[in-house]
Every structure is written in C-alpha cells, then in structure tokens.
Image 1: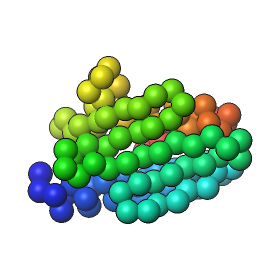
Image 2: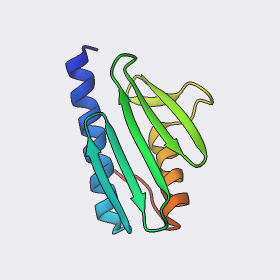
Image 3: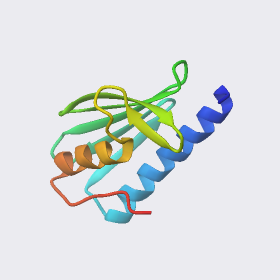
Length: 105
C-alpha cells in the first residue's frame, strides 16, 4: 500500500471512530491533530489512537496498555496478541467511559 493509500485509510478509521462515539452519545471529547486522535472522557481518562505512516501501523494507547496494529487483509491485527483493532479500541472506550460501546457496522 502506498503512503497516500495508508493516510486515506487511516483518515477513514478516524472518521469511523468519531462517528461511533457520536452515535453512542458518549460523554467524550475527540480531538484530531495530524496523526493523532485523542478521546477524553469526563472521568479524565484518555485513549489515544495514532497512525504511524512509516510502519503503516495504527497504534492505541490506553490504561490497559499500548498496542500496535498492522493490516492483514481487511483487518488490523495486533502484533503482540493477535487482537483486532476495533475490538481492542471498543474495550478501551468502554473502560474509559464506563458505558456500553461497540463498533456495529
């Protein structure tokens, strides 16, 4: 995948995250700056999603830890434990917000 394809794909991921948070009506603020999407909850907890263009990876930083995801087919899979990006992120958002959350298609 070219760098521009990766950037477009990761922009689409950021858009999907923001839309899902809005659709669930979570008490959370999102701030997108360059390669980083920060999700801050009323509790003060944060989840950071970062695109790393050089490695073509998506990263998540949360209380539960840091995760690096590479694209395998249509999915983003963690190098550490084989978990899927959206499942991991949904868990981090549930933990931070204390509310039910998922990425339903």
